[in-house]
Image 1 (spheres, rainbow, N blue to C red):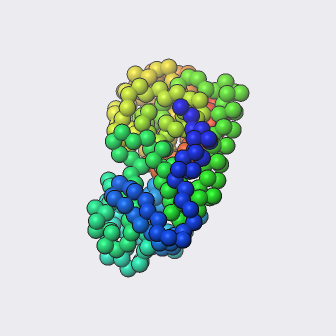
Image 2 (cartoon, rainbow, N blue to C red):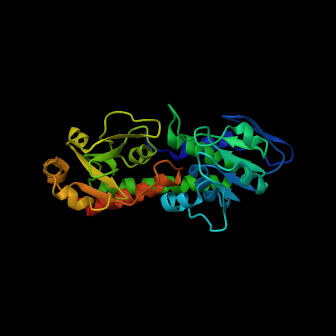
Image 3 (cartoon, rainbow, N blue to C red):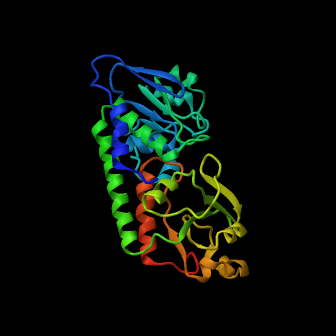
Length: 308
């Protein structure tokens, strides 16, 4: 099912709250959060939360794994003056406390128990990636809730409207160019012989659905939305276009060129190998827009027999 603008905005009607004039409450994965006013100093302990705050026009005072965000997520850009509070799996509680936040945004799978964080500041817990979740829906929920919490409802709606318009535009281009078939296999190489295949429960699936494209991989993956397997598994999906997501393993193109197995694959023989820049597969709603743009551009440009 494609992302529908009415659905996006309808959700915001249920999440939006009246202007702060009294204490407001939000139920979340860690309990209930009560606030008397919109927070100003916010710490984000995962990259999806960092991305979401930046989309709302808010620069967090601290984030987990700042260098990693700039290397892997990249967009929206993180300002240089933001403090680093340690790793995503083990942030420094002392560093967080020194920043004197009035809100901490975290998730259950990537940070310490929220009870420890609650001793420092009010804490909002939402996990975009967890068993049986739909990543785009959870990322959208985080955007809308934080938009309401931080008095940025209009900005949150504008972000979703922009994504919807981009998806519609790219879908129309693909349809006009007869590029909605065959199915798409989205992969990233872990080394010369192993790949990560993005499955129907991934964040990427929202982009494929909205672009009118079919995911060629038939089964679900882990709750992060991928399956790690040997390159030979790609032979199980012969009637597809193979889209390789950067970054690439050094020397990959030369290695594949010398592989009899690779040259045997139907997508290779049919010149249906596509290479696209990375979109962070474990991020928030903005990554859907990035993937839609780069994937559409690649499909319209045409494929090749390698990842050069």
